Image (cartoon, rainbow, N blue to C red):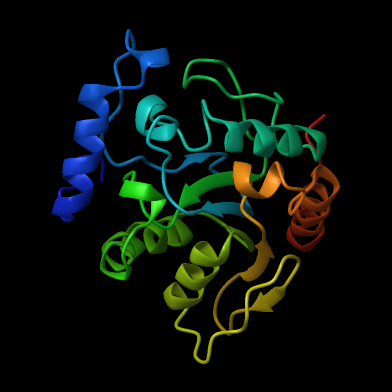
Length: 214
């Protein structure tokens, strides 16, 4: 998966960002490739995002690691017992997930954080493979794009409308939970607050029947 080059636009962008870098990270070596999912191989909950951030996961090689969205998400994962740490900075920081796997609808950082439907469809087989290999019961869809991708993956038509806290049980798949994406646009404006995110994660834990990390 990490050698995939099916989407020319994404390949060009992820590699350009990795070469040019952000000033704050100019001394670092960027990952600059498709980002694989990670977490607990016994996970029953999947946190399903949009795509790697250009200077977050595209830099670190791990979703929601090293950016503001990740700071917000990992704090919530720690509060709700899914993560051993409230922060995730690098792939070598020792953070562990319990009962949770993190992945995304698109595996390469897209320009303006806006992947196309064709790029989404190119990536969906990777998520399908994860769902085959992992005992996932609940998918927390972080934003409309992830919600739509999960519904497409499950072959659901017509598509139920996305909403924060929305629940839908796929006929032959997991329960989908809608959650606003922890983007700065949402968290800085109060569209998504810590209690709102915690409530969705706790609901996912309830549906999955997984014990908390001690």
